[in-house]
Image 1 (cartoon, helix red, strand yellow):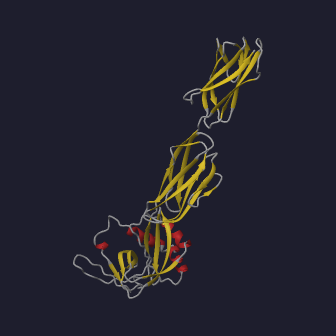
Image 2 (cartoon, helix red, strand yellow; image 1 turned 180 degrees about the horizontal axis):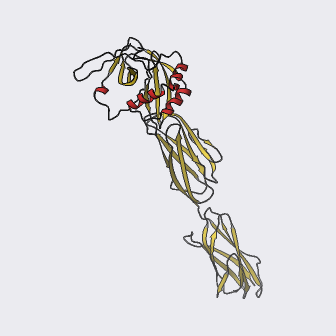
Image 3 (spheres, one colour; image 1 turned 90 degrees about the vertical axis):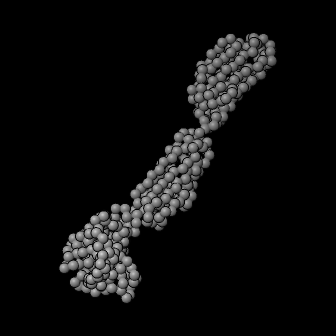
Length: 400
């Protein structure tokens, strides 16, 4: 049987026999623990029937049977309550029934935060137990998660004294970084930095970035996979205090505000979200082409000018308008187009075209009458809000 030393202020010692009991190693402390209860116990033998928590274990099935025994469950709960554990008992019992069980050797000198035992048949929690026997002890272990923390349950085979080891809790943090603005069609590089700021590894972190509608030329770094709707990364065994950068690169065909939202989730840790945005801007590219449909023109006859304006750029232009100047040898007859054409003496003005989309074209048509022989010049200035100065075009017409 194990011999446990209970030192106190006068350094008295006593022998205590431990029966095979479930031992739970927890990295927790309670404010109600008195100093004497925190003194270390030395165990040199395990398995005394008077103090063991439950009979010895011969197989993993025995271990599962102990934790599923309805007579032992209240005692297990009491042991954990005495220790101050804040987890969920159902998580422990489910893992004991289903989790993989591994056999280990507890080395001499192993220190257990507590160990379950019995005193006069009642369950008791012995704190800070040192294995001081002559050789390592065979024990069964399994791991489980409860309330966001990972634990390992260790149960020496010579007794069913169990303890829990607190393996810590992973915690994911996520940041999203994107350029403030990018021209239409140019690559947009969005980088996510995911960090495990906790004190335990995350078994599997999954990071998902929804793909913006219309995105093209999509690819991802760090083995990210692209679907129709998401870029997804998986990080396995994501260690504590580590970070990874994950980037997606794509292009956008249209101007607008691009809002990006990503989420990182783990099998243990809580989800973390982050947002960033990029303004996709277009570049104006207006082209004007004024042509006469007949040349030369006899005096007294009419000549038609077609003024075609094309938006070659990637930005929508606003308040697009023309101001045309007729030579003294020509007289305005009529004008048509996407907006009205107004004449004042020899100056023609079109009403503004409020919105002019990229990759489109419009045409105004102006009809004038030849008044006198001339090497005439039909002059056009094109204006838009996006232009710092007008675009000038001149079409010659020979009047005879």
